[in-house]
Amino acid sequence: MSQAHSGSVGYQGLPGPFLSTSTSSFQDFLLAAAPELLPSRRPLPAGTIPESPHGTTIVAMTFNGGALIAGDRRATMGNIIASRHIEKVFPTDHFSAVGIAGSAGLAIELIRLFQVELEHYEKIEGALLSLEGKANRLAGMIRSNLGLAMQGLAVVPLFAGYDPDLSTGRIFSFDVTGGRYEEHDHHSVGSGSVFSRGSLKKLWKPELEIEDAVRVAVEALYDAADDDSATGGPDLTRSLWPVIYTITADGRHRVPDSDLSAASHAIVAERTSAPGEA
Image (cartoon, rainbow, N blue to C red; front, side, top):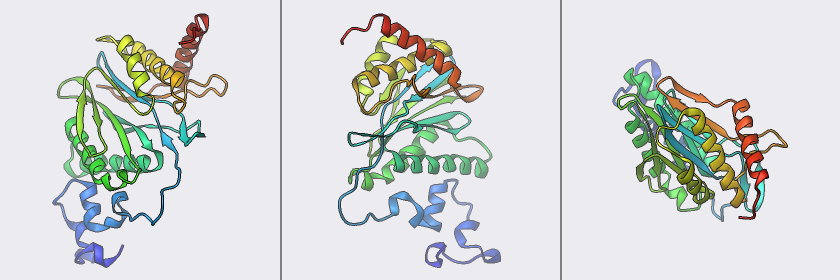
């Protein structure tokens, strides 16, 4: 670490920011200790931005006792399928998870920084950040990425978690300027969101049980993949299924592939029996 960024040297040769307890934010600490490591502080080289993998459709919904967030597995680069295996949904702490749409590489880096941000807060404060606080921290990180977003490297996450204070699941969406919006019942982002949102409007019901919510999420992603080439549907040939996390008072859990395989096969069998053209 360069002395220029580390400030004065303190106890046992440690740079000043390492000895400060004035902030529980890892991003603020990094800004003081080594700002060049923040994605938003790295200068871009001159020239046009080359094609890079993009993630697409993410859906989230509440159910009886929690929230769910799901993403398909396809990344695209122009008209090319860049990956069939990408994971776009990540746990962020024990009671929350986030899905990403937009520039995949930058989004994954931002989510890793967000994971460290929440872990850092818990270690410094000795308590979990509130769900609203987590959403606000994520909004601040997106806002700091505005310069890259205006050059075409936008990140659009969808955040879901369980609020222990309200004993319910909650969903938050964001825009590229860092605007934070609480969504009710269900929401979707990404290129296939217009189709998955229509599916959710028909299939989601209040007080869904967790198994029914998983089925609704898989079907919403199936509908998105049916009309959006950038969204990958359940891949029965390769046994590739969406990534889904459920978050309840017991914490967040990844839905096992066996459950997703059963739900996907059931949906495909139903659609095969009455295919239609629409």
